[in-house]
Image (cartoon, rainbow, N blue to C red; front, top):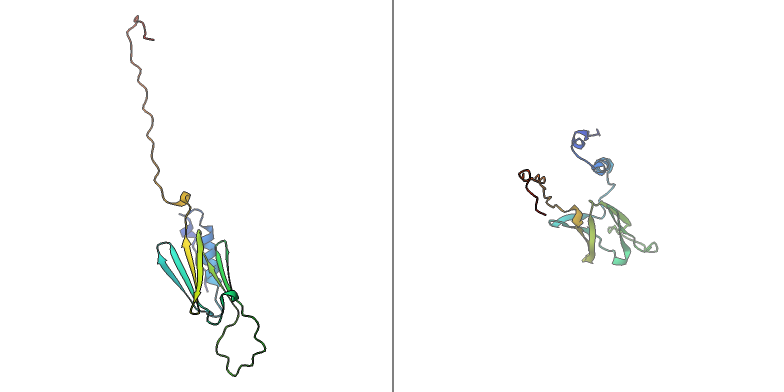
Length: 156
């Protein structure tokens, strides 16, 4: 697989070094399987939802960990080694899914219903990063000095 040269893009951008790293990582990463399956939805302008099919797992079998720019969802079922299966079609194997999060995306909640785990995400920009208008000040006007005739007393 050939590498893509993004240098023309970065000539007109400032502070996007992390974007380059994310693109490089995405091109190298090839998931080994699609377990458990999941959806990513955009539910509003700045809110998202990840829904994972985790049938057979209880809420206490799943951990959700948030690190800077990373969400990790992992599932581990207590040992069932003593069970003798005649047919074992349900995976229910341990899993770990990693999701790269954009800056300022936070996990706002999680719930499990009917074998589906939903993780709610919201992008919350700090006020200092929200667009705002800058007022342009004009240069101060020069003071004019009124000329007074020579020999007249100045008013105090």
